[in-house]
Length: 309
Image (cartoon, rainbow, N blue to C red; front, side, top):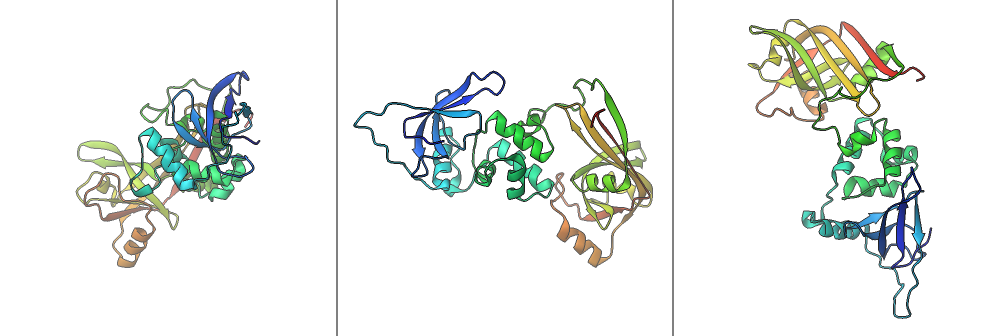
């Protein structure tokens, strides 16, 4: 694909082949006219850096003798700042300002421990495009989102954040579901991909189930809390701890349940190791420096998926 300044980039609808979006190419980054391009979209007037996918093509525009065809060559950071200025989201001091989709892509990739190059290879997109998508405001095509979702084992709806404010489980059930038990190794692997789970405890007011940020360290579940908090009631008892994942778009998901004794971690070296390896502070905030460890005595899990998977 090669273009000149002033040509149109046309993105076709993957379903119908009809034009879905078009815009004028207002900036080139390579002397030979190959992608990426700075595109001013006709529907929004925004300028974004675009790495065209297979559903895009160039519509040639006749250039008059007074029209310059020399490529503009801003740096990747400068192109991102131009796009941010047009969209009203100029980052301070030129710092990266990823959009919501970019944040979700980066978070999902890091959660799975995938290097950027490997994620790009799986999605069949350029590593440079993935870097731009994660670090700058971007407007990826549906085809790119489908490829990214497949590579990251999630859904387009999840990357778009369409279900962020909706309760899970309101989608339609699968026509031919299969409910499968997960083995211990698969349960441990799925536990290690998450950072928020629910601990079930008995309190003076009755049973309670509380979400907590957790880590999996040395095959044990560990979370931070305050001594007078509800999760602290787990100490000295046998508790249940659960994590799950629901793919609302595909009506499938899984859950893992850990049952075992909970104790407070007091050894200074063990506390220091837990703090050093924690990936985040507790979301609830405040002083939560008491570490509670749950050693699994029973580990079970189940997965709902289409019958042919």
